[in-house]
Structures are given as structure tokens and as C-alpha cells.
Length: 441
Image 1 (cartoon, helix red, strand yellow):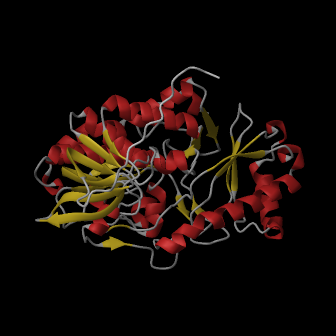
Image 2 (cartoon, rainbow, N blue to C red):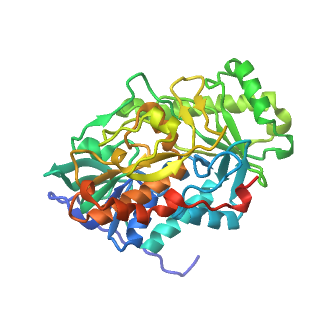
Image 3 (cartoon, rainbow, N blue to C red):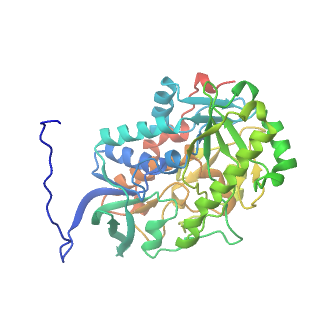
């Protein structure tokens, strides 16, 4: 028997009648710790602002990490002239994860997509947030946003450890579902003609990469036999990570409702679809997938649910025509990627010739609010236009733009900032045309 003393003492505690709450003061509060919110928070902190970052998950990275999106899309120009669109943390991530072998550039006939290891991205985000000195409130459910005199004043937040009130001069709504705008009572938008489907991602390991089917072969077999296996989506994709034995599957479609009971069921539906997809792959492509096993399931991935009514609504013709805006803050060439059919997506690419379309600041601000900037998938656009700008390249650019807009506005209004000064700050994301060796043909 060991003679080492062990701690055995306990004490009795009881919840006090008046529960303690915590007050947090900041210059800028960012709601949402996905890639958009991370970009906004880090950019604001580097501007010398006190930043608090709020997210409902008990972890950083949002869908980029925890839903295992797996690909950086919309970050490069299409066609032979494949220069980079987005800089800031995007450039740092490409550099650092590239150096550690945690990126793979998939170069198609007219596009460049960057696959990434979600674990490595999660570590990068954690270290960057820590280095920037950003205050965090994680596992946080925002219950209310007080709104007076055209300004959000504070957020009322609940956590399992107690209630928190966040006071800030400016707010970034990077929640994905326009949570701040919704709770502040501002006008929002939802799809009028049915849901936009989400995806349950899964990563398989022990895949025989030398036996992988071509994208065309996989697509043809899915269209022919998907329903035999109970696979709902007939045009799913498999993202093979060259140099590793893993593949990320984007092969499901499930509804992502903004209603608590239905939303609680969607993850189960997504996993059931995923299991059917794995059975399909093992049966139809045994040389590649016979030894494959699940490494990780992501949280249910959500594409488009609810977004703000902005001072301007980006429309599909703006995207198709590559309309230039005086208040542009981000750019991309990603196509129209509409997931409104349970069995197939609608894709309209812009890889036949030079094309760039822009995100204007006016889509990110409400006409009725002075200190709120939306960023990411909750900016204002029609369903088709939003589908082309909600991918991670332009989302990182929008996060940076939100931080700089609020920094310039200070205690004033985002509607009255010096647009020339803002565009000068964002010129890398609007004008720069650098190339990366990995991404060139």
C-alpha cells in the first residue's frame, strides 16, 4: 500500500439565490468563431481593439473545423490566370499549413480548390487567437441583443457556468444565421421557395489512394446506383487528400431548420445518409474503400438559413456580370452553388473566361443599425448570389472588412465611414494579384 497522501476533502455548495453574472467590456464583439469571425476578431485585435469572441460551441473554428468543410473555395481566380483573391489570415493559413504538409491544391481545368487538414487548421486558429489576446466566451447562447438609438448596446448570454453580459461599441454578426440582427429586431431574410440543404461531412481513413475512382467515374456510378443504397444525394463528392490516406465525403443533403426540435434531429438524419454513402463506396469501389473506416464525423454543415436585410441586396445578375461596386470589400470567382434540390445541386461556374465578382459593404450593413456589420453567409443577397459568396475565401475577406469598418466608425456609424480609407486598408483583397507556385498550372 502506498504511503503517499491523497486529497479527500470536499465541501458543500449551493446555488445562491442571486446568481452571479459576468460583465465583459470590449471595443468590438464578434459573434461566431467560424473562419469569418476568426478573421474579423484577429484583424480587429491587430488594430489595437479590445475584442471579445462569442460562439455557441465550446471550441473555436466553427464549421471550418468542427463541421469539417475540408476545402478553401473561392480563394483563387479561375482559368489560366490563377492569382490569389484573399490575404490577411488566409495568406497566413496557406503559408503555415502548406509548410506543415496539411494542404493539398486540387487544380482543375478552370479552378483551384485547397484541401486542408481540419485538425491542423483548428490548432492554427487556437494559437492565432491566443497570440492576438482575444477574450473568448465559448459554449455561449445569445438570448437577447438590446437595441436602442440604432445601436446594439449589449448581448445577454447564457453559458453552463453562468450568465454573461457583453458591452461593446461595435458588433460583427458572423453567426451564420444573423443571430444579432434577429435578436435586435432588425429585418432579416430567409429562402422563400423551400430549404437550402446542408451536408453532413465525414472523413474516412485507410483509403487506398492508388485505387481511387475518377471524379467522373464516381459521379456516373452515383447517378446510376445511389438510390439502391439509400443515398439521397446523387451528385456527391469525395475529396481525396493526396499524400495521406484520407478522404472527406460531401455526399449528403439534409434540411437545416431554424427550429429547435427539428434542428436537433438533423444530425441523426445526416449520419444515417453518411452511413449509406459509405456502404455504397465500399460495395461499388472495393479496391479503394474496402479497408476504409470513419476517422471523424463533423457537426452538421449549414449553408444558408437566415440572413440580414442589408442596405443593398446582391443579386444573381450582379454576380454573373461581375458588377463593380464603389463600396466593394471582397472578391471571388466562385460559381452559383445552390443546394435547393435534395438529390442534386445546381452549379453554374465561371471558368470559361476572366471573371471576378465583388461583395459590397452595403450588403453587410442594415439600413437601421449604425454599429452592426454582418459577414459571411448572413450578408444580404438573393439565394443564388449568396451561394456564390458564402464560401471561405470571400468569407475571410468579409471578416477583415467588418473589423476595419467598425474600427473606422468608432462610436459613430458604419454608414458614414471614409470609404476611400476603408478600400485602401483592404486593397490586398481588392487589387492584389499574387501567384502561389502550388496553385499555378
